[in-house]
Image 1: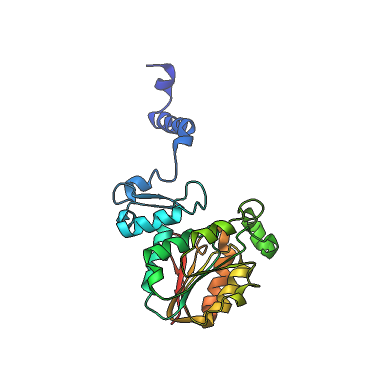
Image 2: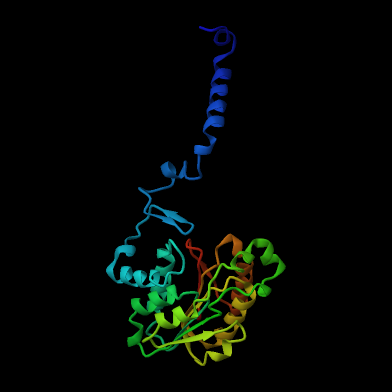
Amino acid sequence: MSFLKKTIPYSVRSLYNKVNWFKNHFTEINKFSELKSTHYNGPVTYDTDGLTTSNNCDFISEPRFAKAYKAAAGTKPWLGFTLQWRVYVVCWLADYVKNLGGDYVECGVNTGAYSRAIVDYINFNSLGKRFYLLDTFEGFPEWQISEAEYAAGIAMYGGDHYKDVYRRVVETFAGFPVEIIKGIVPDILVKCYSDSIAFLSIDMNAVAPEIAAAEFFWPKLVSGGVMVLDDYGFPRHINQKLAFDNFATQKGVNILCLPTGQGVLFKE
């Protein structure tokens, strides 16, 4: 036995070994190290878009949804598009309200992935409704964001983050009862002529246009109609969450926050 082992107590040597191991292996440790053994119910089934779970998500391979999701991915919103759970939520909600009177509206469309999935999933052509798609279709107007939003990182959506996709969207929805309205919200809201809305999706990444759209369409939202907020639960979008929490309080409704980051509220 070496001199150090004879003179240094075992407890001290043991602590030293542990500290030394941690120093040498720190980069191998990740936030899921404990979750894998203590919080998961089995193998990980879904791990993308900020959501990791071991719970069942066999809806992804269900033929009806798989077909709709393929249509959404076909709009090519970005490389590596993996929003299966978020797309499923909007499809499910769109299906849930399809028998109500009222049209469908999406504010913040980009290439039309969500709306393309919906029209396929619920056979929108058979419903006798109109689907209104509102967007600049060419990017995010940075002047709409507040200083607080800028500090939170919302400006990342400006510049070259989005491309001009207007012609692509027109081609995507050819043959569908879809009205494509190009411009900046709130300026273009009056061009949506429907007086009755059953489904409203809001995804414009900033407080000003989103609250403007919510206030404009809320009186038109039918009883039982749904509003889906795409950015509600994401840390970078905390200002939108706070604004919509205030909006919901004023309207006397509650927002359901989903682990996908989406927020859902129904018109009573």
